[in-house]
Length: 412
Image (cartoon, rainbow, N blue to C red; front, side, top):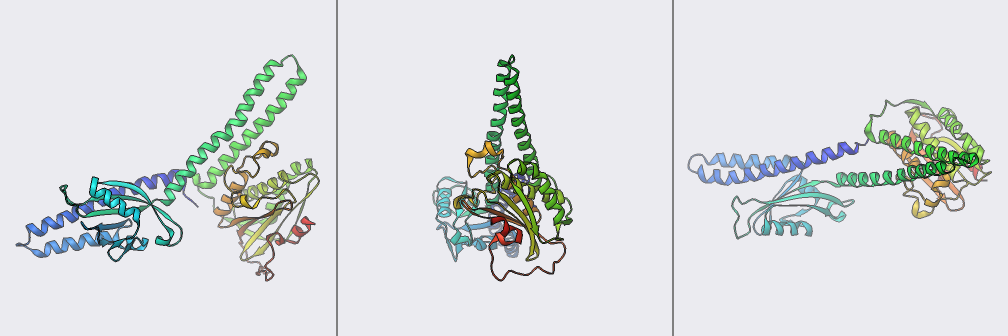
């Protein structure tokens, strides 16, 4: 389960405090090593050597990456964490941004900055590190002296901060629409108090906006719980057939209103490990999404199969499909492929985000196959609780919508 936004922010703050304390300790230890060596050379030269060994041992055990450079900017000390980042080669500091920060420390003293480490340096994707650089000379001099850099990976902390800002901005925007509509409708009702027919029409519209607001608040609460505000309940065996039946029942009225039939098929008797209420919500959201974006008098199919140690629950529709550029973003909070359809479908933009977090909390995943004009298939994958004898890899490499026979029928 991923940590909550508050927990990650607290962790980032604590990491910053630790980096500051450790950096100060390193500077004191190195300075004391020099003074101790000068003062105790006649008494006991071994004390200075032991102190230097302790300081180096401390650097090697630290989680933050530490690099110490001499007055010529040659690396004299780099702990294992720094070398693991790939920012040091022999006695050279490789990243130009870090070299520039060292020059700033020489010129102006202590500096802090966020530096992006390229993927080709650290291996894999790029990383963002918070860097604290300080001069190690106790007394500032005209001639540049040694500099220490302490680097702390802040990639996840900065990502969470950005997500939090976007989330707050999006919530404010989404809440303004139904709240503003309710205010305008209330004013209109006051002005039409003598016209019962108009009042009734406005009242019906107010009820619609109130339902939309209640749905948004409810889904915000659900999403907050799934993201770690509350501990995940114990995972227990859950019957997939029961989840599908409940999800179909919950979306039955909305489907019937559009003349859409829901066909249920696939393998029966599958059991997964999970929380039944959350899995039911996830499948319900997939079915509701299919109903919202399917034309009237069409068909939706939902079914399950065992594959690769997991139950694959697939929901197929014959709707408008999703453009290729939008497929990777449909699981983002508040993201809608077609903003103009938001009011007509009644969607909040949170349904698929909830599905993604349910899948993640259960150690599973969710994916989408779609073609514009042909429809979409969303596949929720949840680990099985009981091994299924028919669970064998598909040698044909069939498309995601072949997860159950009923899904193939749903496209015909």
